[in-house]
Every structure is written in structure tokens, then in C-alpha cells.
Length: 115
Image (tube, rainbow, N blue to C red; front, side, top):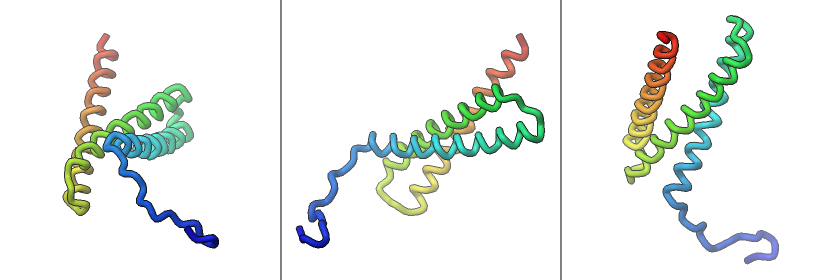
């Protein structure tokens, strides 16, 4: 170590795959929640959406972003290559997870409306 520039000569310890997936899920939650919150604010101002529905949509966006990113990150971690293939797998699996969640939520809403 230098007196002037404290530098560590040891590499950081490797992260476990679970830690990486949790970090990706947290990032997905932030991005999904931010997108949902922005959309909810716009809908409140322009379409008259109430605050309860806006909070529910934002919570759904956080959950969907976290789950979609976690599933996509886990699938991408199985691929060693850091290039376009890994990015494509992440995109495809994340899109499929989001589609599945949205479909399930839509069916649930439809069943509640039919009752």
C-alpha cells in the first residue's frame, strides 16, 4: 500500500449468483416502479385516475419489474458470453415474464369484473 494512494492489490471476492440476481431484481424494481409512477402521475393529471388506483399500478410496476428482471438475470447468468446473446436472452426472458404477469393480472381483473 502506498502512503499517498491507498490501493488494494487484492481482487474483490467473487459474488454468488444469488447476490447478482438480487441486485438485478432491485434495479428492475426501481426502473419498473419509476415507469409505473410516471405513467400513474400522467393518468391522474389527464384521465382522472384516483390515488388508490395509481398506488396499486405503481406497486404492480415495482413487483413486475423486480420479478421480470430477476428471472431474466437468472437466465442470463447461465450464459458465459457477455455479448449480444446474453443481452438477447435477458430481453426475451424478461419480456416473456412480464407478458405472463400481465396476462395473469388481466385474467384476474376479468374474473373479478364477471362476478
